[in-house]
Length: 579
Image 1: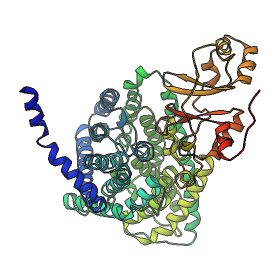
Image 2: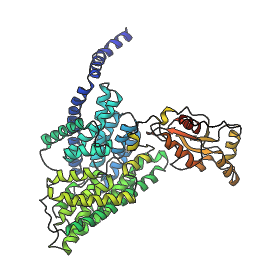
Image 3: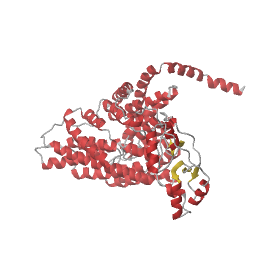
C-alpha cells in the first residue's frame, strides 16, 4: 500500500508534464521564441537583484567615510566564507562565468545546473558586497545562460536547442547589467558564439530587449554613467587618442599576464588549500582599502567622478596600479566575480590620467579629461576582453553621443592590435585552458568535412601509471607491439611517451618516475571534433604514432585514441605491417 501510494502521489504531476513536454517537442521553433521572452524577463529580474544586493549592501558594510577596520574586516571575512562555500557546495560557481558559459555551450551539451545558477548568484553577490573589486557582469552571463539551460532541459528540448538558448540568456544578462541592449546582442554573438551570423540572432535580440525593458520598469531609464556631451576640439586629438590606445593595450597585456601568471601559481597548490585561497585576495584588498577606500567594490561611482572631471591626477594613476593588483589577486585566488567592471574602471582611470596630462599640455587643442576617460574605458575593455565591436557600441549606448565614436574606434583598434601581438591567446580562452577546458576555434566549429577524428577513434589500450619508474616502464612494454603509450594518473591521461624517449631517459637515470618526464600542463592530444590533418601534424611534431582523444570539458578525460595507421587508412594509404 505504501509503495503504491507513493507511486500514485509522485506521478500526479509527472504525467501532465510528460504530456506537455511531448507537445512542446512538436513545436520547438515556436517554443524557442516564447522561451526567449521568458528567459529575458527572468534574467532581467535576476540582474536587478544583483545590482540592488551588491550596491546597497556594500554602501552599508564599508562606507567611504566609515572606520578603516571595516574596510579590512569585510573583504577578509567575505573571501574566507565564500571560499569555503565555493569549495564545498558550488565548485562550478568560481571565477568570471564567461569561460564557464562557453564551456557549457561547446563542451557540455549546454548543461548548466540549477545548483550552479543559485551558487553563482548568491556567492557572487556576497563576494562583491564584501568589497572584493570584481564585476557582476560576467557572473550575470553565467546566471542568464544557466536560467536558459535549466528551462530548456526541464521542457525536454533537444541538446542542440538547449545549447542555442545559452547565448540568448547571455545577451539578456548583459543588456540588463549595462543597460545596453544592442551591445548585449553583439557580445553574445561576438564573444559567446564567435559568429556574428549565428542563426539565433532573432531570439538573442528578443531576450535582450525583454531584459532591458524589465530593467527600465524596475530601476528607471537611468544610464550606467551620466556624462556631459563631448565634442572633438582639434584634429590633433586623434594623435592623443592613439597614444591612449597604446597605453590601453599595454595595460591590457599587463592585466592579462599578471592574472594568468598568478592564477597558474594558485592552481599548483594542493587541492586541500582551495577553500582558503580566496583569503589571499581578501587580504590584499583589505590592506589597500585601509589606505585607499576607492579600491573596494566595483567602483562605478568613482568612474562617474572621472567621467565628469572630479578626480585628481595622482589618485587616478594610483588607482590604475592598485586596482590592477587587487583585481588580478582576487580573481586568481579563486573569488567569484568577473572582469568586465574592473576593465571599465581601470580604463576610465587610465584615460582620465592621459586626458588630464594632455589637457594640461595642450589646453586649447584637447577636450576635458572626461572624454579621454570614456575612450579609455573602451580601449582597455577591447584589449582585455577582445570584443572591439561590443566595446564601441557599448560606450555609444552608455553616452548616447556619436561624437566619441571615431576616437573610440581609433583607440580600440590600437589597443586591440598591441594586446593581440603581446598576448596572443585571449584571456577567456587562456582561463579555460588553465581549467583543462579546450574550446573549439572558429575553424573547428565551421568544419563540416567527413574526415574528423570522431569517425576513426577507437577505445584506448594499455597505458602506464605516472608513478612508476623508467626501468619499470621498460619492463612493462618490452613485449608490447606498440611504440607509444599514454601516461595516466588519478586525473586521467597526463602525457604521451614513446620508446626512444624511455630509452634515452634510462641512460640518465632509470629510477626517475614517468611523472617527472611528462610534468606540465600541455601534452599532445586531439579532440573528437578536430580534423585528421591536425592529428597527423601533432604525431609528426612529437614523433609518436598514437594520440589520446580527450574531452573539451576536461583535457585529462580520455575518450579514446587515434593511431597513425587508422589516419592513413582513412586517406587510403596502406601502411605496410611492421615485421
